[in-house]
Structures are given as C-alpha cells and as structure tokens.
Image (cartoon, rainbow, N blue to C red; front, top):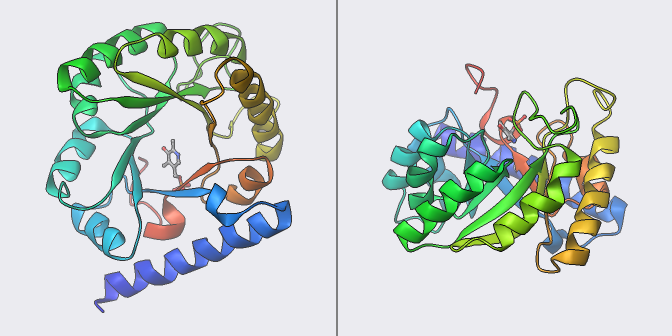
Length: 239
Ligand SMILES: *Cc1c(COP(=O)(O)O)cnc(C)c1O
C-alpha cells in the first residue's frame, strides 16, 4: 500500500468504528447510517483511493472543483453528493454529475435544478437544507432555509419534474442558540424530518453530522453523516 492509501484506510477504519459505536449506543442498525466522505480540497487521486477502499458516497461543496473531479472518476462506482451553497447558474453543471443535492434552500434553486435535471435527462435527489441560525424567512450565512420555510420548499421539490424529494439536511450552527450544542440542533432536525415524512413518506433522508459531531447526529437519527477531515486529514485551507 502507498502511504496515502494506508493513511486513508486507517482513518476510514477509525471513522467506521465511531459510526458503529454510535449506532450501538443509539440502538440503531449500522446499515441505517450511510457514510458520505466529503472530499473537498482533496484531489481526484484520493477519491479513487477511497473508492478502492470501499467508499461509495462522496461529497463536494464547490462546483468548480467537483465537476472536473467527478469527470476524472466517472468510471468509479460512486454516488456524488453536492453539499455546498449553490448558485442557480451552477445548477446545470451540478445536475450533470450529482446524484443528491443536500443544499436546496430557496424556490429559485428548485426551479433551476428542475430545469437542469430535465435537460440532463437525470433525476436529482434533493434535501432541504435547514438553518437553525437563520432569521425567520432569511437564509443563514452558510445557506439553509428557516425551519418555517421547509413545508413550502418541500412541496415545490415534490412537484418539480426531474427532482425527487429526499429529506432534510443541516450543518450544526456556529451562531445562535444552538452554537456549541449540535445535538440539540440535530434533535430539531429530527422533528422537522418527522413532520416532513407525514406529508412526504418517501423523504426519509436526514443528513447531519460531520467529523466533530457525527455521534450526536447518529443519536438524533441521521441517516447520512458527512465526514471530511476525519477521513482525509485537516484541510489546507477553508473549504
Ligand atoms: C466540509 C463539510 C463537511 C465535512 O466537514 P468535516 O468537519 O471536515 O468533517 C460536511 N458538510 C458540509 C456541508 C461541509 O461543507
């Protein structure tokens, strides 16, 4: 094994152990939690190694980095997740490679993604990103819709050609009442997910938890954890 491959394998094994323990502690099945490895800022060669090591879900947060990486790894058996703030003018590119967009937070983006998915002849899974630090009706600084906006956005996604409503996503807030308490934010996301599923039973994905708080997310019912630095190492720059 090359050094990088061995390092990624060791990191993956540690993350796998953490997810496994968190599942045991929460009385959940390991199979009910999907590990999505966030490869942002790392090269396509790392994505390939991860695929060889058995990773099946990867995520990126910037289209300009993700598009060439996805193209380079097109032959690997990977599901691509887009988790960053998304401008409507990037929807067409993202619809070309992404299978799931976790960051749907406004009606205009729903319209743009729907048009892009139809044009690409693909179906895009969409998660509504909920921001617990957003003021009522306003988007959070890192994207995300206010909790009150979720039902209407969900209806828009569910009614849009080319899109499939997958569920909800959040990033633990750095400001506001939930700062420093990711578990409480994740519990609120669980409540929002429960209400969403009452209206849209198939929208059962709950994307929450990163390297520092995946245990809290698993405890609060996350079905997808998005782990970057714990697998790939600390990022050289903010990404
Ligand atoms: C970078 C990123 C992650 C992964 O964060 P780590 O702390 O590196 O695990 C998860 N979700 C989103 C939206 C991200 O941008």
